[in-house]
Amino acid sequence: MRDKTQANSAAPGDGLVRAGALVFIVGAVATLVTVAPLFLGTTPFPTYMFVLSMLMGVGFLMAGAGVLRSVAAGRRTARAAGQMSEG
Image (cartoon, rainbow, N blue to C red; front, side, top):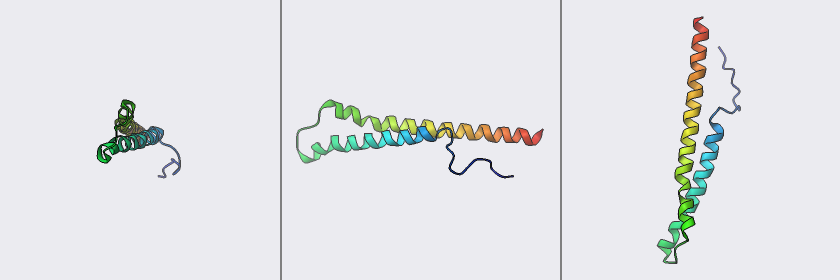
């Protein structure tokens, strides 16, 4: 039996994973920029940079939610295929 899903088609959680990765990268860059003055001995950045650093966690949670959504969709598809073969 052939899989009817195209190789380049988007699964339900793919967009959320991509967005989460992008938010995580922005947070990682903000973290590096925020921590750099501590090592360089310059004046620290304002508080909003520390808030931007929190985007790493937000991005990680978004990507995790996307993975869980993809897993749930895959389980639903497998369950539907199993019911079709039984009946």
